[in-house]
Each structure stands twice: as C-alpha cells, then as structure tokens.
Image (cartoon, rainbow, N blue to C red; front, side, top):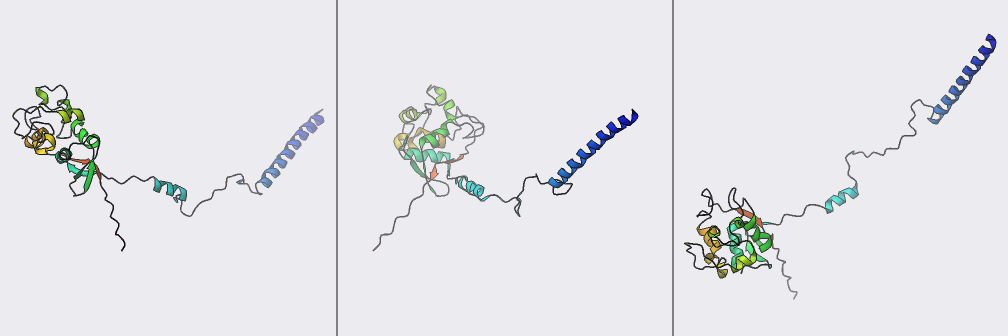
Amino acid sequence: MNDVRKMIFGSFIGLFMVFGVMFSIVYISSCGFTLTCNRADPLVVRTPIPTLIPVSHAETQADTGIAEFNKCQIYAVELVGAWVSAGSPETDAFTFVDMNGQACAGTYAKDIQPLFVENNLWYSNSLGCISCHNADLTDRSGGLDLTTYEAVSLGSRRVAGSTSKGNEILGGGDWEASLLYEVLVNQGLVPQGHSVNASARVPIVFAGERVVFEAEATPTP
C-alpha cells in the first residue's frame, strides 16, 4: 500500500517538474535566452538633445505670437482736448500726437468715454466722473452730464463761477471755451464737489493706435 502511494506521489512530483522545465525553456527562449525579458518593451527613439522641440510645434508657436503693442501714450487732458478740437466725433476717428511725437488715432467709445467712466483714474481712489456728472443734473453734477455721447454733445449748462468764454460742455469745438477745459484744466479737479485731497496731477493714459502712413510711390520718368 505504501509503495502505491509512493508511486502516485512520485508521479505527481515528476509531472510538476516536467511542466516547470518546459515553462522555463519557453520563457528563456522567448526572451532571447536571457533572464531579463525586454523584448515586449516599446522601442524608444531618442534625439541627441532631449529638449528638442518638433519643427511643427515651433512653427505653430511662431504663428500665434503676441501682437505688437500699438497704443499711444498721452496726457488724459490733452486726449480730451484733441477730441473736442476735432469736432467731437461720435463714431469717426480723431487724430492726435502722443508724448513721443507719434501720429495716433482714437475714437470716442474706446478712448474718451472710459475717461469719464473708470474709477481711480484722475487721482488716487477717485470715482468715475459719471458717479456725479450724470443725468440728474443736480448741484452735485455741476451742470455736466457725461453719461452718454448725446448728453455731452447737447449739454449747455454752465458751471457756477465759470470763467470760460463759452457755456457749452464742448465749447462749440473750442477746447479752451468748453466746460471740460474749465473743470479739467482751469480748476484741476480741486473745486467743490471733488476730493479736498485731489492733486492737480494729470494722468497719462494709453489710448488710440499709432497711425502708419504709407510712403508715396516715386513716379517713374
């Protein structure tokens, strides 16, 4: 009985050994007869410079570069003056010369109206002009409604004590006769209604765009 058991156990052990040897042969042969099987690893192609950018990517980056900054620098008061002197156009562009002597062009919507709307522009912690100078036309507004182009162009009330030659907000196209000139230049934003700490500092703003004139072609003889 013991001999039969020994034969059975021996057969199982021999069978496992045969399977083990066969598996080892298959594994080693499939891996090139080495114990470090790397045949299944993906092939990695490396360039001599690891940080090399593919050409197609570099070309894409060059095409989507940031556009050149084309704004002009000018004192805010001078910008308003140029607009008034140009006839105060609503949609058409008006021209001016910036601090660098560069010819520029701006519009009311993009360059003038923001001067009346934006906070903290004329002096530190200042509110936008239209917070007081609006359609209510109370004593607080000083007779100036700067909320819309129509209000500015049709306004005719005069600031109390004004020494300007005219009585319109825009002075009929005469910058020095306008109420805007009276408030922004003569009074320097310091009279009643503005902050007692307001300085006469005139802010410099970025506005308009540089105008590039094409050279005239030289006539051929």
